[in-house]
Length: 290
Image (cartoon, rainbow, N blue to C red; front, side, top):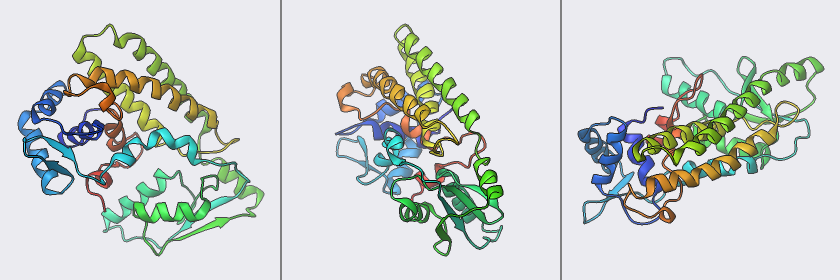
């Protein structure tokens, strides 16, 4: 996954617990990914203009308060978002958005996919009712993510056997499990070789391997058994916690801060804004919040 100048700046600034980051450090990091100095300076100017990044008196930069920090670190809490499933469903029904309104169409589709919804019938999206907070919490999050307020978000029960079978087949649990096995293998292999790599190569690898793992966690539909194996998600999160410590150590000196000043390694935001295969990009939500 190749970061943009904007996503890299946001990513690196989000990693710092306190204080700010020099433009020199940002440019040095950008150079690892082949991003030009001027692109970083332009990205910084735009982010400052948008109020997402602040510049201090020393010419250093920090993330504006109330920006993306919680979104970025939310991968650690993904397993805590689920509860025991009683067999019910959450459904979303909304009037068709004119196809000409491409921005709203993208926002709706992104919000629904982000929360693991799939289409059971045209205009009728569904997911298991196993998220903490139930339908009320799902409704609030959908609206916050951009689903139109006129949409009907309700708890559904009493599906026919045929509809239940159809709903259960909307997700590929085996593919999810296979993806997690591949992620665990990739994290283990990378963790074993990072210490022997040249510094710059280790930084790039931790950024990309960690980012791919976090993207998989953040985009997980959070399904209950028997549709998928919830333990697989927990295993990847635990392994990624360990790998994240390696990422912090790899990047800390480069960022001119100690490793304990980093809240996470610089893979987090990159993973969140990256476009996963078959999914709408998250970038316009994070870089242009409502």
